[in-house]
Image 1: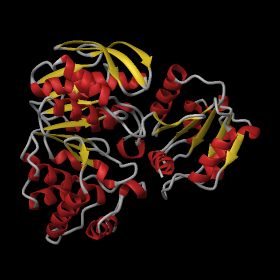
Image 2: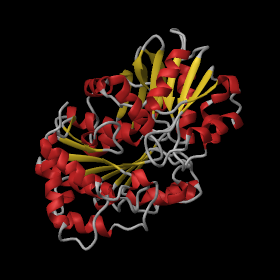
Image 3: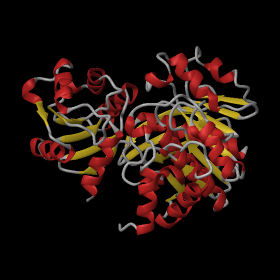
Length: 433
């Protein structure tokens, strides 16, 4: 798809700003720049209600599910997610469709104009967050659903106050930014819970609950107590789920996503949508929403013979969830893993969580970002994780890794690409080219 010259100019301007997603560092926590930016844009985040979503894993899937549920209910919905897999447009959607090149250029031009009045330039993520909030106001959404970029309290998205705050789970990730324990991470994520809001809490550890309750939500819904998964079973290209919420039960619903964790995400999303509407959802609406939901790069099938899947399992908890989902939904005697990690991760822990030692073949490569480990480092980590030298290959780049994996895997085998969303995005582009 061709990109207009005006859009290219705007993206070049955007890319010239500090991008902490690529740099792998976080500046001193502050919301001063984003607060000044949205103030200059007319405080667009106050023009509509917001559902705010944080968590270690599952944020993007829940955001997409909530957006689809509310959209089918008849509301105009804007969603904001990060990072993108292939095009920055993916981050901002209206009515389930990614923002057009023209609309993206227009809203970035608005941000560029007011940036001149700021004492210090905003970051890449702050610009996109402000652009999303401005775009949603311009198209007059009935509701916005925004995914936190990192943590909660100091995240740029937190200049808006969510009427419903969703916490999918709390795991050990980004510890260099959020603190070394689940308690410190929970405290940071709790920052999106505003006094008087409804809290949908997907994290079930009772020792962490007080961090969220201390924020003063008016109502709290807890997974496995107030909502959750009663049963799920694999089905073609997805699963059949039986879910419950405070408003009722949803029986034998087809969810077009693989993995038990996606059933948990669906229960969380329905509870959040019901909390926002203060009403139960029509069963047929839930059926349509979950049957049509898509989450690219999350246990996504890219090809067959051999079966090829991509999954952005970028932390240990995500890797363990992927390993469990593969065992349940995609058992195979011959699995080739294509892996690449960012330097913030422990590659040995990640490979062990993925079960790399039992894979028929492991191909390591560097994701396309300066934050990535070199392939030679990953090869050493694979050996430490128990991968036999005869089953290990080192690839120069992502296309080389994919070509090697497909060549080494029989037609009835399986190729799984995982470890970083940058790796998954590049693999997805390669398959879709």
